[in-house]
Image (cartoon, rainbow, N blue to C red):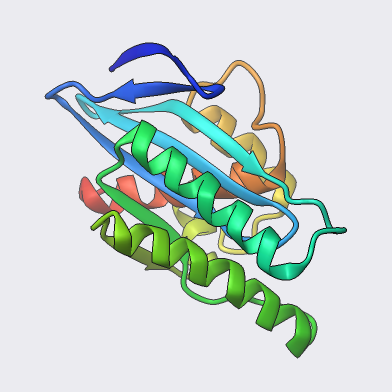
Length: 177
C-alpha cells in the first residue's frame, strides 16, 4: 500500500496490485465508525479509521449530511472494494431504531453512488469471526481487533473497533477462512 500526501486531514491511500481493501462501517447517529483493512498475501493489516461524530445539537438532517459527506470522503480517498455493515440494527425503542435506520440509509446511499458493493453481516456472526464467541463484549471485540490487526494500541472507540471487526469478518469470508 502506498500513501500519498495528506488530503483534507486524511491520508489518501492508493492500493497496490496485490492487496484487497475492505471497509467496515458501524452506523450511528451520534458516532459512526469506519475502519479500513487490507488483505496482503494472506495477512490482515490495519490501514485507516475514522470516527464521524456530529454534534447532538445539530438538526437531524445536518447530522445525516455530515455522516454522508464523511463516508463519501473516505470512499474517495481510501478506495475500498466493498463495504461491510451489520444487517440488523438493535435498539431499545422504535424512535432510536428509526434514527439508526436513517444513519444506515445515508451510508448505503453513499456506497450506491460510488458503485461500491455492500455486504451485510449479523452482529453475532461478526463477533464469532473475530473472537470465536458470538456473545463477545465490546471490550473483548476491541482487544481482539487490536490483536488480529497487530495494532500497537486498541482502536480509539468501540465504534471504530466494531467497524474494523466488520471488515475483518468480511476478509475472513472473502478469503475462505
